[in-house]
Amino acid sequence: MKEKELKYWLAWNSISDIGPKRFYKLLKEFGSAENAWLENSENISKLLNLNTNIFQRFSEKKKNKIPGMQFDLLEKYCVKVITVKDNLYPINLKEIYLPPPILYFKGNIMDRDNNSIAVVGSRKATYYGKIVTEKFSKNLASVGLTIVSGLARGVDTLAHKGALSIKGRTIAVLGCGIDNIYPPENRKLAKEIEESGAILTEFPFFTLPEKQNFPRRNRIISGLSLGTLVVEAAERSGALITADFALEQGREVFAIPGNITSSLSKGTHNLIKQGAKLVNNYKDILVEIPFIASQKSENVKITPNLSLLSKDDMKIFNLLSNNKPIQIDKITEISKLSANKVSTILLNLELKDLIKELEGKNYIKL
Image 1 (tube, rainbow, N blue to C red):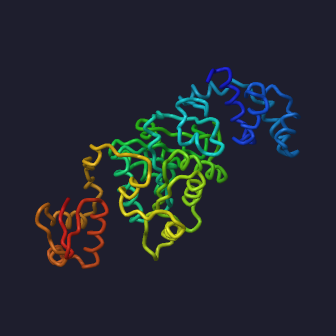
Image 2: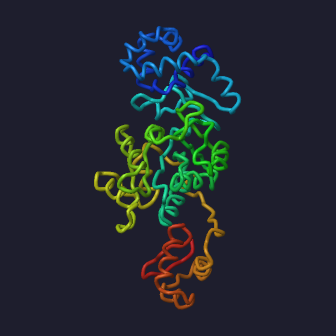
């Protein structure tokens, strides 16, 4: 898009009361963002059917905006923008109802990002949820899918980190301005994502991470993706909002089953009851989405990070071999740990793809 027209798109986008629906209505009526900007505010108010309070707020904001000033902010914060009319704009997102007119982003958006999967879940993920998120994100990234999430605490953070750990691509969608990374403890992670993907938002500069922004962020997360994977979610969870948007957008929804006694399994189990696909491994996802993994990706070896294992985890892991299975009772006897402790550790190691259970409760290293 030419700079002259872009400055008016940016100006309109910086007025919070003008969302995608109203903006597209202005474009249709006046032919361009510039023509709409130069139109009398009263005429705009009538067209958009603004009530008195919104009209007064809108008029004041518009009066204080100078088209073109946003360019200085883009330069200051090293931010790039694309509009829905640009070729670089993600195809999946362009197909949804009322796609965001503008995306602000850092990093790079690539054609390969059209092969994306959203991974979302609870901010208070259990140990099980953390392990599963890391495992699925790594495996999905290893076959060439871009992992999309919301940079939030818990599952979102682990989804991004899982992709980055194998040098895969990941995109973080913000519910605030791109100058305001939230949560603040993820600023370092955001920088890493910029180098191996992108952070992006539809919100203009200086937008705070307020509660009402996150459903709009979730709509973009699902819109960018071929499908949405929900790892853990309570009955009322933002992750479920993302899943709802995915269904509205005609995208696949996947859910990972969890412990029936955990409150964080209620949301995912309800999704499964409602028709979401229950997944046990990443290949269950690949068969459902219009994406063909490269042949070489099946042979990708994900190097385990043994430094994250506890002392007892390493004790059990070191008892196992690659070619001689050991029965669980023997492992318990040699380790001198309780049977419950050994069972828990073996499950954790298996979820991390470090060991494999064979018939008769025998185990080997992978």
